[in-house]
Image (cartoon, rainbow, N blue to C red):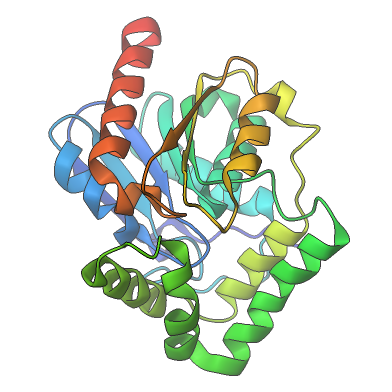
Length: 266
């Protein structure tokens, strides 16, 4: 697959806050807006770089399909352009899969990984890959509004507030479109990091909402179990978007982990 990377001026990146740099990579149905709870609470502790992935939200559509290597290389280009040192990489769901590939391809750019409600990829079986690929067809059939209305509520627990559900749906509606979403879906369907995880040598924190029914706790456990010395934490009363549904707990772990790594390696 072609691995064309967007020109820098075509990629939208929020650059907010001061302190150690945290690169934020959103999920497959989201955008940089997903990290508002982290940016608002921790902007005085950390500098956040939060992108809209190529073909999402305010970022331009790529001229050719992107595979996972291309997304990782695009993220690497953001780091090289905006930071003069390795950064902490926070990836949610699909963003965590990109973060994993970024650390595998460009280990010199990654100080630590925070993988939230993520996975080893959807290429672990033909059934998983087919289910992931079907999402592109679903978006094509329903359009962004109905697609977001159908999928958004599944990303949080039934106890989530109506305000949060509305925000998740609105973020998805404004972020996803074709062909970008289809490229992202294919990148997930073609990926299985199971055998690659032992090669990750950066400090890693794996977080997962205990009510995540999308990737699930068992998948996060497998992800953490494959990475040497990874720390695994479940967050109570949170679904797939734990960073938004349990922001105080999520932020506490994020802050503590990054500060520890900075003291050890900064």
